[in-house]
Amino acid sequence: MDTIALTVTCPSTRGIVAAISGFLADQGCNIVDSAQFDDLRTGRFFMRLSFRPETGAGVDGLTDTFADVAKRFDMDFAFHDESRKMRVVVMVSRFGHCLNDLLYRWRIGALPIDIVAVISNHHEYQKLVVNHDIPFHHVKVTKDNKAEAEAKQMEIIDDAGADLIVLARYMQVLSDRMCREYSGRIINIHHSFLPSFKGANPYKQAYERGVKLIGATSHYVTSDLDEGPIIEQDTVRVTHAQSNEDYVSLGRDVEAQVLARAIHAHANHRVFLNESKTVVFPATPGSYTSERMG
Image (cartoon, rainbow, N blue to C red; front, side, top):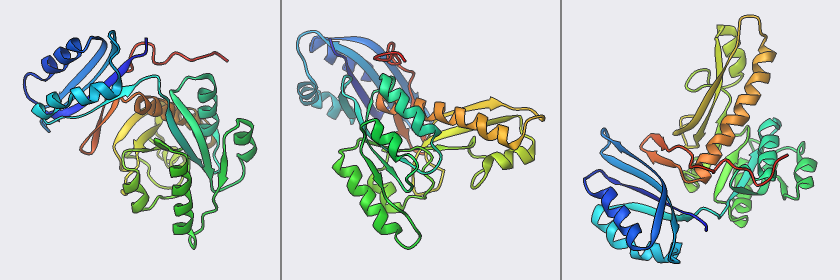
């Protein structure tokens, strides 16, 4: 039996959990996983539930019948069929470690996504992508054709029916228009532990400062460069004896892991925007299971 997820945000008040659980029980649904959070600072309530319909209830019917409950609590809500894979367009430049990692996880079913296209401003990974039977689109970007190139990229994204755009070390700054158009739907991996060491050569900056931890940050893209709401972060320990090149190599591994975890959270509807931050609920049991190994 497939599970359905319900995501809810609304002003915090008493009775919300009782109203939701009572509604699902009345609809013949059995809750199998639940997470909630009250932000006392913003006065917002966040909740995600997974449940199994036991009497034939579906996403469309539940959406219609839940409207009265949602209106009473001024909720933003959505029901999600958890068997549906999110359609993803990956954008990449000349660093391929994140792309390679995503292709592997996609191939074994470790991420609940379908990679429906790859866009690059270079040709390096065309053969790799095509060998995975994924459409590859080369869109050259220069300072003179940036607007035209971005319009072409947006056309590709829309034609592919993408739910999510992943910047897998895509080394171009997106326009304000593109950030607004896909707000909350573009995930970036930043090769440093924000907010430290922004801009070019962050590992070199970290090396020169003698840091003991390097890391990576995955965040939603906004018009403020590298300032979007953070989804996932991680670090790796380094020592005084390691070189700048060591930092880069170690950084690649943590970048790939952090980006994959951020995509997993978003694709499982576990991430909620909360002003300039995010609420990220833990993964539901079984959601990391791969369809096949190897």
